[in-house]
Length: 139
Image (cartoon, rainbow, N blue to C red; front, top):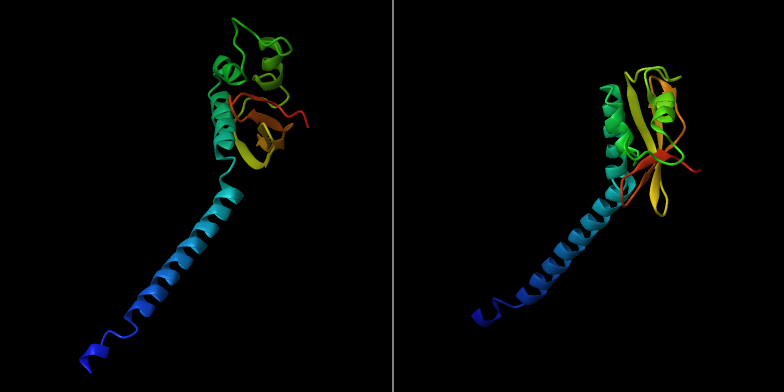
């Protein structure tokens, strides 16, 4: 009867491999869904958080560079003076003392972000995916 001692071992091994592969696939799908739901716009959300932190520290020139402009080479439609009118200490928002980056919406070339500054909702911000340049949302 010893020659039947290993009978069915291959089937049990095969079942175990199939089970492990199934659980691995299920875990990969669940992790992929979690990433897609919560982290697909993480870089852009972080970029806006950095921008607002720089404004909070009153480093307006650095914040203007994050907008894709510089004092030496200002944006054609958004001068540094206009930037200060919108984001400076004398702006309607006032000095940035608190902020919250809310929901984000993926678009083809960028991300729209809902943001609150000093407890007030501001116009939606836009972050380009490739260059990570910030601007006001065109939508």
